[in-house]
Every structure is written in C-alpha cells, then in structure tokens.
Image (cartoon, rainbow, N blue to C red; front, side, top):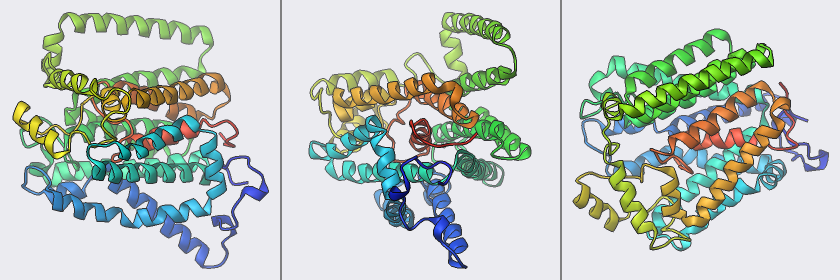
Length: 429
C-alpha cells in the first residue's frame, strides 16, 4: 500500500497507479503530473500572472480575468484523470469526511437559488476541482512528500514576491503606497500566503520533509514578507501562530515545565491584550487601521441587514458582491469596490445561509475533535500543519473572507490538513 493511502483493501486500488507504470513512460508521466500540479498551485494562489496582466491599470477587467482563467485549463483537464487514477481511494476518503463534503456540495448546489448563477457556477466548479485535487494529493503520497511539495510551492511564491519587490518595486507596491503587494494584486494576499507558508515550512522542517537550509530560508522569507507587506490581519494572526510554533519547540521538555511556560505565556498574552485594548486607537493606527477596521464595520452592518432577508439559504455561493446590481450599489454607497464581506463567517451566512454556517461549524468541530482525540498518535508533520492551520483559518476569517475560497491556497491547505486527520488514513512519521 502506498504511504498515505487509505486502508481500503486490494480490490479498491485502481489498476492505473503511478507505481504500476514501468519503462520510460512511468518517470515521464510522473514528472509531467507533478509539474502540472505545481503549476496549478501557483496559478491558484493568484500570484505573478494577474499582476503582470494588470500592469499600470487600476484593476483587472472582465476580458483579462477570462484570459487568466485559461491558465487553469491544463489543471482542470487533469482533475478527471486524477479522479480516475485514485477513484475508489478518493471516494473512500470522501465518505470518511462527510462534514467537509456536504459543505462543498451545499456550496455547489446553491447555484439553484443564487442571485448570480453564472458566478456561483463557475466558482463552485473551481471549488469542487480544488477539493478533488486536494483529496488526490492526500491519498497519493505520504505526509513527508506532501509537505515537501507544499514547501517548494511556497518557496517559489516567496522568491517570486522577493523578485518583484527588488526587480519591479513600483509594481510591487500598493497603488496607494500603503503596503507591499509583491507578486500579488493586493497586500492581503501576500500576508495570507506568508502566514500559510510560515505554517508549511515549520511543519516540513520539524518533520524532516525538507532540509534545514530550505526550511529556514522559507521561514525567513515568509516572516520577512509578512512584516513588510503591511497586511494588519495577517500580521496579528501570524504573530499568534509564531507564538504557538515557539511553544511547540518545548515538546522535548517535561509536562510540568511545558505547563509553566504555557502559563507564563498565557499571562503575558493577557497583559499585552489588556494594554492594546486600553490603547486600541493607537494600536490600530500603527497597523494602518481605525476603529471601523478600514470600513469593515460598515460593511458588516450592511451584510447583517441583507442576510436577514434570506436567512436559511442565502444569496448563493461567492456571487453576492459581484452581481451587477449589488456591485453598483456598493460603489455608490461606499465609493469603493467591495469584493467580499471581509468576514468569512458573515460571508457564509450571506452566501449559504444559516444552514451553510452550521455545516461550516460542524466541519470545524470535526477537525477539532480529531485533533484532540488523536493528538499523541498523529505524526509530528500532521500535528504542526493541522492545528496552526485551524487556528489561522478561524482567526483570519474574523476580518477576511477566505472560507471556501475557490482561489488562493488557504482553503486547499486547510482541506489537506483536515483530510490528513481522517481515521483509517495510513501515514508514517
């Protein structure tokens, strides 16, 4: 049985697997497959290509966005092949993660009641493809190989960001001069990618999936980009994740020693939080924010109001703010284009209703339960990926909307982390 595959029996393994391939075609096929997957990850991240297409423009027009989507065609064509190659293993994995699958299916069928069915349909299709490829990666390779692939992907992204900052400094800056967007269209994307990279590099380094130089270089680039990007939400979440990672370094100590360190750390966090709360305006100002969180509170009030009109089903997955009527209203009312609710939980209620929110909560609870119950038996790489990703995802979505996002790598890595916790999944430390 290949490492990382579900224990499903010999009759459930498809005949077309990479291990069955012999001769010159096997290595060539594997090389091409890995290259396509890596290319898909880079394109899905939203880095490099959209910014180059933007040039001196203010934002991408519909025609340019359509051309950029063509870059995903090779990977979209790849998804059915991957599904066929590991069909029964993927189905078995899906059946053991019903909370995740029902959530994705609910997003997909929301096209039926969506106010922007074309947008919902296109993005739901991307969500399903992304989730399918994530399932394939989990059943096809062991934890170390998976972490190594993710680490190299994020290293490419970190180097690309650094290259844009050094080689194309004018393009790498935000148009308003407030922050660095690197190889992305917005500084928030840099910040989010840097935090996920921070998590992946740490897990890969501690598990031995990558060499020490690669892991340390990746961590250094991730933390450096996180600081200079100026994405306030990501900086706060990244700092919390870094604190957790530093605490993980104490795992060689006795339980009582770790308990004392944890208690002092928690006390320090409470003191710091109290000081920051007492000086909240100065703190937010230092992060480039105000007490409205750069207009977010106004958006949240509007979202709460309109979501109450369709509380159970919502307005359809990922289509509300870009529907023509709503987009024009938001532009007239707030004088700026608002692509999301800037709160993942409100976004869920808005798009998929309270039913969708309940499904999301169930998914989080399942992941938390599996982490808690199986913590000691999980490989170190899985522990150091899954727990920080869960914390990152929960915290970041209080001020950003990345839940179920069909673009970016946040949802992909969160799904991979969740699937690695599946009971019956055979993984090796």
